[in-house]
Image 1 (cartoon, one colour):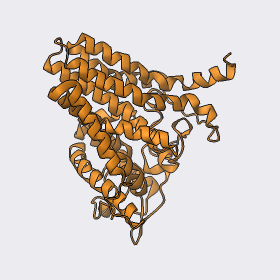
Image 2 (cartoon, one colour; image 1 turned 45 degrees about the vertical axis):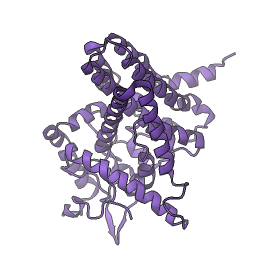
Image 3 (tube, rainbow, N blue to C red; image 1 turned 180 degrees about the vertical axis):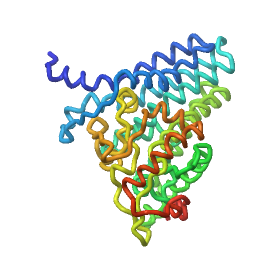
Image 4 (tube, rainbow, N blue to C red; image 1 turned 90 degrees about the vertical axis):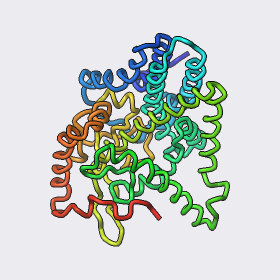
Length: 377
């Protein structure tokens, strides 16, 4: 018999399970075809923005000493999602290439929506999984990333981004006044190079060559190759193109989020290549309730960088006195990032206010504007 305490634990985790509803939704729009295919991006971007207005902010914090057993239902959604995404993605590839009611435009729109799903949900969940010590969870994180051909994100994120965030050596930290259209191609190139260099340096410290099979890039390439082959088998060349399109859409969604998370924020240089420790004020924070349900508290990014090993339900909200606050949740902010004049009008005054608040002694910000050594050695 289910106890009241078990029901309470499930109920507290239930809002984070809202993402599951996007799976039947994408199958419904695939069946309907036509303009219905734009419904999924509308739901993820605009519906959750409306819900943010209705539900307001969540300023409460969970007990950081909560046991793993009490987090079962939170962990379950992240463990379940890789299988749901796999079946959905490859099921849609087969369906779209074996039906005659979807036009080319409808297929493009449908797999753009699938990319939003695998980017907004899949990559965010892989981010949670890759930070865990459990090997099963870390593999599931790799499995998710292989479905968007971005497996190196794990190496880049754990070995480069968390170490160098807010410094010129982090490709993913968006510079002040750097528009997203400049940021995106730069980060695609630099993050891959920095991830490979970081893994190579890690092997060199063990006196091993980069070609050693313990290099995770071999696992990345094998998983990604398997995904490409499966798409080709199920859907032919059209299926492969649709797979590549959803992967690009997912990566674009991820890097839009990365762009927002640290735009214009820097850690103070202490001299001799050293920087101050990462603190909550080195990431933008957003306490909007509904979008944090969708993104499993990713918007509590200030605490994630301060305490990277915390599971998502235990991430703490930091107030305006402790961390810079975004005016809206990620769904609105990522759309705004695509319109540079509006983005600068919204965010640049906030960056200047942040500088005056935390670093009033720094009057010359020019050294922080250009990356003199962007890639780790």
